[in-house]
Image (cartoon, rainbow, N blue to C red; front, top):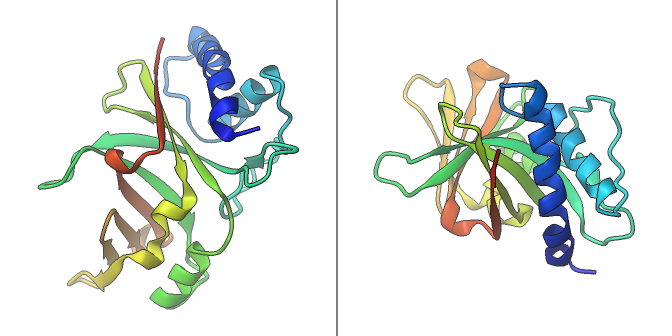
Length: 192
């Protein structure tokens, strides 16, 4: 079974789950609540996942679809932006790299074989009760494909190329990625 077939089955169920969330909450669906909502939608669509309610913060995989090869999923919340002089994009955060000392160590850590797909639930700021489910292959945004430099103050590493990324040392050396929408494999509007 292909991921595209699974996604087509998933979308109406996921939309229902997101609407149910917003019957109770006005805040955007993010973080572990997004993971659990996606897991529940997969289960209700007939696909078991490996997701566990353990608030894991490991790099990459949050769940995989049982019995489906190359289905390791990293769940992210995203926000739509348009960088100065850039194209419509989605920005999302990634792993913290405080324990990796050099830039090369950080890049190597981030580019390990941790996941196959990103599932982003992206929204506008301010939140207008609409989302876009954005799905793309993890291989499209490996940070070792970027050209990296350090900013003048030495507080941030900046990567440029087909997409943009930054590692902010004042924020636990967390990775932030700005990914162009024209590089996204699948996208679905979800209105409440």
